[in-house]
Length: 198
Image (cartoon, rainbow, N blue to C red; front, side, top):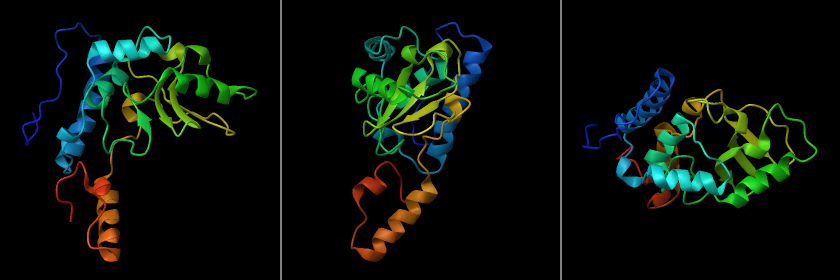
């Protein structure tokens, strides 16, 4: 439990492999680190396991890696400042996102081995997608691939738990300071989710 009374989800009732436990712990450690830097976890809403599996099923996928599932359990329904400006999770990413990602791969070389079986956790304005290769879905903490229209497909992150989606408090501080210099009040979207940062 964090200092503001927020308890991270506990899924100890399900048998986990050591690799799954490490992946889940790594995701939870990221959340705890950002909470310690001033982020308010009450500004996000996690998805249930049933919602996560229904969402994956609509993409034609029957399993979700442990690390990805843990991220969605924390921010899967409303992600707030996490990966701001991008659609993410069970409420925002739809089957059309997967179709768009697959369309971006046409006539492109990629090291992905099962793109048709991919899972798409994030969609940026229907031209750029973050995906997990279908061949990696049974790995607890698989790599994340960016697929962007007209660009080469190069590995983005070696693991979901290392995927840089966490909000950066220092960046928020700089933006808030800039908006205070040019106006009477910073945009609420810049401060939403964080305790006083100035």
